[in-house]
Image (cartoon, rainbow, N blue to C red; front, side, top):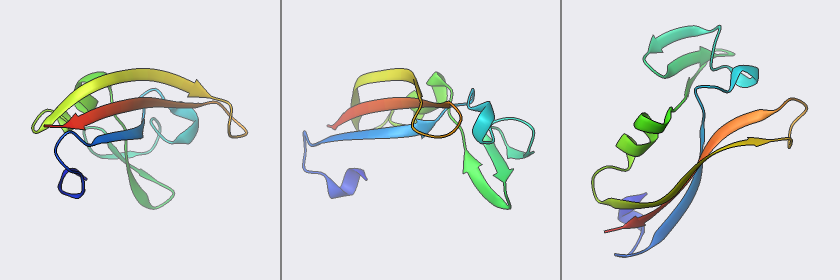
Length: 86
């Protein structure tokens, strides 16, 4: 992602939250910390620290929010992050 942006380019993303129980954050086989097998596929979940660590080098985090959306049949819990390439 970083290579695709110009310096000072901004990215907005939504990451699966470790609290997203309705969509696989708990109950599946944990492959490694934060990575679970969900319906036969690996799916990563982030707490605040791991989301910040993902953007620790080469980025300036502008905002990070913990959100719940009603977009799906069940509540979806996520972390919305906005970061600037530095």
